[in-house]
Image 1 (tube, rainbow, N blue to C red):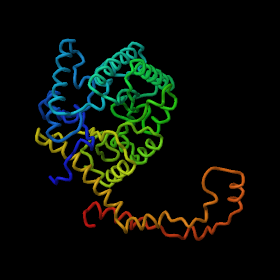
Image 2: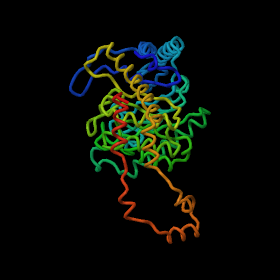
Image 3: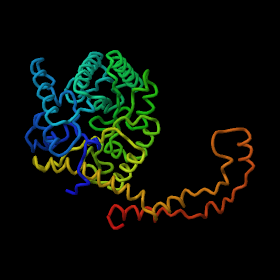
Length: 389
């Protein structure tokens, strides 16, 4: 492995217990790998050079664990963290696996389910904070429907808002200092899920009582499932000051949620995503929410984890090369050229500026005739990625 592509703590690469711990089960096949304990996973991640490990509450502590069993598991997990130097930047709640949540958690029609979901989440928040988490993610895996006959969507949104407001107040009351990050997904496992995209989530956040403490946790695969441009959504979240966390993986457009190794499918999309994160100075975790192919053994799982991080670092280097390439930057300057003739119209509105703009004359034919060298720019980008520049 090229030394310059070795992961370092400053890269903030993280994986979930559920990612490298994936046992290879799918809807059509039984597991192909033996389960790993949380302690084994921590040591695996330390071995491949990760910075941190994230978890759902029940990734670490089984849902039916006794208090004594919980205490023993958490103690051993803490010791593994201390032994390896890994940290826990993020935690989340599993509100989708247990049959109790078959029709949702916060949006369930059953008030007892909604109350249980709040109880479970408060307890999981306590656990996450105990282990050092500063970001708490909410993925509404069952918050949706197969038929709109089942739920009133307005009532569902209101229930979701009430739950988030309650949990924000709980975290504030406890003095936790947490940031919440909401993770959108358009479908699967439900036929249609509420707050399906980054844009939906950004709008929803502004209706909360404490929007300042709530952002988004966008995932590559989730936006690609809907055929959307992930980079554009991430840029919108960044511009809104709401990119609190990010899930990196890969996904063929229009397929089920594949959770492939980062960069495994859409390499150019991955490049522009890495370039954006590095250019704007994103300082949060680079979390890989993905899993190895079902065909892999334990060695293959390590190959998968190393591959996620190595690809990110390669693309980071390619982004720096793109930014330093004189021909590429000359094209960028040409495309964004400004002769200063419209300076008087820029900036905030004023009546005089509007009047001057209305009176201005523009050569419409010349504007339409101007060639934009996007073909050349894109080809040079491809050549950077292919290593021939």
